[in-house]
Amino acid sequence: MRKVPAAWLGAIGLGLVGLIGAGRAQAALPPWLARWLDPATAPFIPVPEIDVDPNSGTTLGLIPTWLHTDSQSQIREIIAPDVIYNPYFGWGARGRIFAYPSDDTQWSVVGGAKQRVESEFDFEYQTGRLRRSRWSFDASVVYDRSGTPRFYGIGNNSPVIDETNYTKQQKYVETTLGWNVTRAWQIAWTMRVREVAIQPGSLAKIASIQTRFAGLLGIGANHEILNRIEVAYDTRNDLTIPTRGGAYVVFGGVAASHGAVNDSLYSVVGLDARHFWSLNSQTVLAAHLALRYMPGEENVPFWSLSSIGGDSSVLGEEQPLRGYGAGRFYGRNSFSTSIEYRRRVLSLNAMATHIDIELTPFIDLGEVFANSRTLPFTHLHHVIGLGFRGIAPPFVVGYVDVGVGSEGPAVFTGINYPF
Image (cartoon, rainbow, N blue to C red; front, side, top):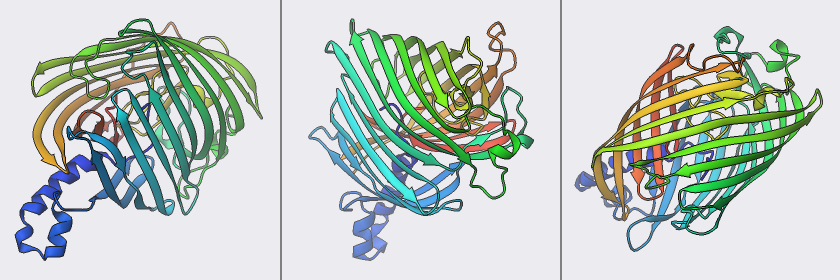
């Protein structure tokens, strides 16, 4: 999947370890409690949810999780509703289904809401993942209303003291149609129709974006249509849990934006490269590099600019910098690179499937810059960190990443590798 907005599965692999430890001590527990703590007899996995994010704060909850496996003990479906509490927005609940009917097709549905401000719906469908047929197809239908985004200004040195908050409500439909020239080579067309409303912030102790950046392009209601062409060369041995090979994408596109403040037509070009080296049966060295340029038109909504910050890479858009919150730095152009040392430290069987636990030191580097003639690696922000990953081959990766940058530590949880 492209990116599912859930910050829960990172706990499942680590939570299974705790459940197994509790199951081994079940002899000292009442029979009814021992049954619930034993992975062999529990009706579902009662995973405690602790989501810590630089923007969202700490969210606590409980995720009763059902894993449905096939005859080869591979996960084919995950059902994971939850009940959560966030100090900003109160109590909430979400429902989630992740389905993996075949190695070539996946889909998911996520929906939920909190007492105040926030709500979400996300449907994702992907087929032709393995590029064995002539065509591949991805589709997304997303509604998201979030009250935690931050904006500090535009530029690589935007100061912490200028922090503002806003409520972002967006709705979009996105499709990608890929022509598989060979198994490795693909030419793809992505189209996205999006409506974005930037509204006043909802966090009491942080200034609202309109009070400090009243003339910023993109505030209010805006509509955007993006068309992008991608040429990809992919030799990875696996799309979800790669251990060798690489994926290299060159892309270019145009977007038309229409809003209350401005109308504009702007272009985007760049590249995204990632490579994986298998050092031994337990260890993988992973590297990622992304470069994004926005030549031409100056009237670009701030939320369409290049950005770095947060925990994950989205092709042609935001890039990770795991010591900072999502969207920490905005600019016309961006450069980002990451290196991870992925080391498997534990393997176990639980809930009729196999779980691997990885320990992952990592380094992130990145910057935004205004002039396309500027060298893209002269004023880099840097982050060092340590990741913990729970992996249920062949489709599921959950992570907890802790990074430290110049503004202090940040913790992220979620699904799929950051790149």
